[in-house]
Image (cartoon, rainbow, N blue to C red; front, side):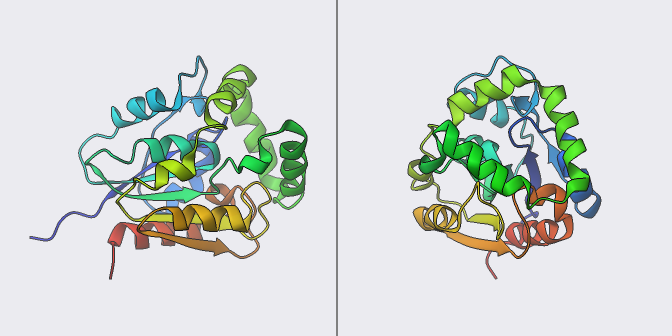
Length: 216
């Protein structure tokens, strides 16, 4: 009997919640895990404790862990769990060059103007739900976390996804992350910016199906 396909488990990005992936989940069945700073208000523990909370919510395996933006640090930290069959990192952060506030703000603004305006009110509503305190705490614990170093120990397949208009996840940063892991690949979505999970649900669903199917 063939092994079951991994069940996608989505972890929203900084300040986001299940609403960010609603259009994606209309295309593909998936679970959503909310964590402090990612759909839940604080306090926000260190990345390894966040990863422990995530592992405690995985249920039966196998699972395909899907991170978006800041949650990619947590997803990678949880990748050693034997139930995890693969990772998909959507717009992973934080490029060390963007850890200073002025550079981050410039990159964020350069990305926001490339996002479809219709989805910005939805993002703001999610930020209000999570709250600025938890968002700030998550940034402080996750931004310095060495996701590129952690990826070197990840043995399962890793797909790094970025939009070609994303300035928060530059091409060279995404390519370096894909190359850091033994079974990594980079996929770029033409015309997309940072909120691919919300703005390009069909393309992301297609990538998740491919990642869940494993090597051909």
